[in-house]
Length: 74
Image (cartoon, rainbow, N blue to C red; front, side, top):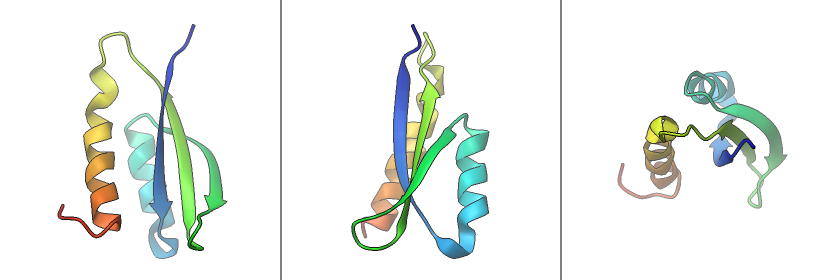
């Protein structure tokens, strides 16, 4: 059975393609784009979890990106 990991990230209108391509290069598949609670767009991604956990490198990048959008230090 396939096990999935998920990621959400805000989409900046002026940089949407670059954001989507960045996550796609890391193996993330776009599932849905919805309007966020504050009016912006939020992208939902998924990718299969590998048995050895080798694809978790993208999670660190996601955490860093989230801190930037939340006003934290990158």
